[in-house]
Image 1: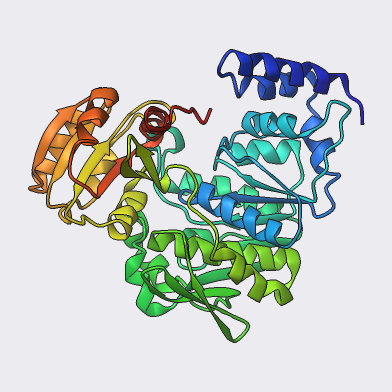
Image 2: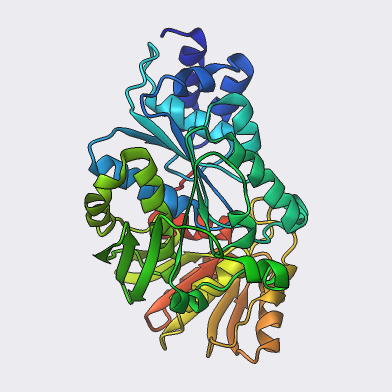
Length: 412
């Protein structure tokens, strides 16, 4: 399918890369030059389009779903860098489509930002949808949690074949759509996954969570990296490479979505494939510089930070917390006061544009801080000399900058 717009935008992408950036620019150009490009290309996929949205866990879950489907021999198009706006998806598409318009994939699995998912619906079809959770996040952008839920409701309703929902999250579980199925937790695992504080304050929602809801996949038990998934009356053990309890739960959502796409008979093979999936960038991955290792963990709202502290506890090594307040992080960092940091015995370094605020917040939880340095470069240089094991909890733009310093590569 030859289109002049593809030639123009791919040439623009090549020029941008030669100059070391501009990943969103080709997508923006495509939106202007050829508004139907995304719809026309994705509509031709044999198995359609699956979207993954929610507040926390989108990038890792998208990676899990993509790798599970690939393990079954499918060619999967996805936005690998986590650029989850429409322009980012278009830029990813331009990287994969040929100059003459050939797009050789079976299915698209796309991570979508809660707000930009609504814009995506205007430009492309959705066959399957997975909603992970609804939490407070970037209040300066999304306002109240009910507004986030309303945005996700539109995405959920757009799925034409199946809608997969987290039954443990009252706002997610209440969404409407075609062919709803749920994934969830056994009762004794629920304390490992603290809900957003706003949800916990809704007594009537808490009482209804998980009631009268059949389930497709349940995370039945979890000990370290050993998980047990329950499906169709069968128990499937799985030793995960992914670290963090929340990634085991994300795995349940991913399994459920893949079962809707491939059928229930694929369950055993999917669990075996899940055991080989690694963390997505910045989501608990271990990086190395000059022989020294550090684990990098993204945090961006109260629920995500609390779950990260549970999944990656203070192990007697060194901890760094880097908090930025740029547009992609959210300007309002008052959410830090809704996180309990008392599990940390000591923080070696705080950094980022809000280093002073982070140091103050830790003081109120009686957590001593050795160094406060807003500039990430000298802060990271000093931290890498601290005793291991080393862990860095960082907001989105701080995570990207730290990763670039450690690896010498930008993700954008």
